[in-house]
Length: 385
Image (cartoon, rainbow, N blue to C red; front, side, top):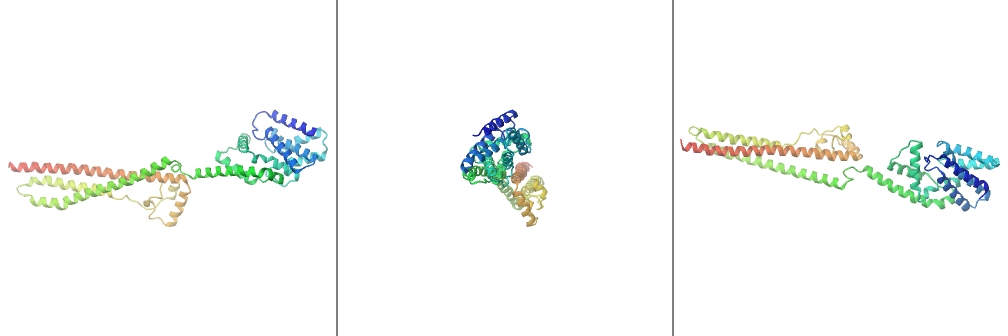
């Protein structure tokens, strides 16, 4: 190592140490030392002459020193610092310019550079292939938040890194041989994480939890079964009361001697009224709800309606329904809203059916009991008259 490189190394390390606030979590002495070390390794692989090795080493040491002055346009500041340092030590102008042009090659995105610039570009991006690349990227994330007020979620940072990995290519054969495999390994890991994040973004709250999904399926099944039970009970009441009105009441009426036994008409009419009232409530329990068969696309997008219930779309053209359904399927939140809405209104429908059935059965029990008791009372009164 030449004397000028030793002095430069000490100078740059002291420069970053003097910066002192710790905000440079990535572009600091550790990163500079890493790039310097990788530059020397690439220089050895490329079999550079000693003078070019010195130029590359100096460029690597100074390439990020501008961050110690300003976070923005650091390359220009880095070149100013390098020029002042080298000229103060009698470095000739031609080699100073060579160092400066090599530093300038590290601007991102990379542009075509000479051999020294290409080697420094590869050394600067060597961290992408390193086992600690993802740890170091977190330091850069904090640095961007501090200096540029750029804040990334975990998923956004993974996507940002993956996009950067796709853009970066190593420019020299030495760089490709040394770093490509490691970079591809890290890129594959980022791809996997990005796919997981996309899958998580697309999944709904219900599908993301097996327990929630199971509970929704069970609830929907139970509500459908309860609807069938309610309809069966309503049909039973309709059948029983229809038989009473059609056959029992006419036969009973024929047996009544209205001139002598007019008081038997009281339980007779109570029984008839009970049957009619019970049939009305049973019929209402089985009556379908009123539906227009049309939907408002804005309501669907806002999660205020469901396209999975036929009553919301049977009067809607297929093209409109298909377009709205595709938009709904593309939004996981809409899937959750549709499931919740369907379960809610199915529950309301079942509740209405059982409320009417309870009224029907309660009135039927009271009416049939009252009429039977009154018939007995009237018969006893007749015996004593």
